Image (tube, rainbow, N blue to C red; front, side, top):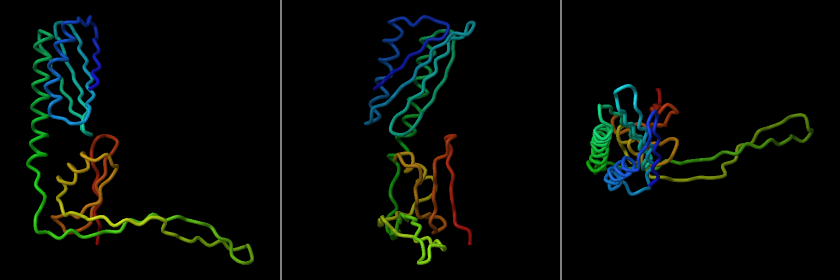
Length: 186
């Protein structure tokens, strides 16, 4: 676990650092992968602000709280993060694969383009050649399940069979943290 602490307009004491690190260790129990935690503690006039960004298992959880005391702000933001982590873990634990639905296969082809000159050297033809073919089982799922599955794997997109529309869809992660859905139009 990597913890980065930053103090803005204040001096970070050893006692405060130790307090934050001990409280963060409780959140560590929920994740099997190594997590990165960025802690920013700041003081603005009479407000003590604690902001924590947690990166684990491909998800990002953010919390920010302020109060008149820095320790109270740290406690409040960590309680907020623990609620968010529990909500995420409960959603994963409640997930149950659909039963009794047929899982169709789909083909994944990679096509290589090659220019070949015709016999007289004037005409150029493009040949398409498949260089890799995969067959993957495709499990029917709804859009929310596909979003959760995409969060759990570290891929840019996920091809899935939409259980609601019975069509093949593609869901992809966008740079701004949202998701895009591609559906066929008939």
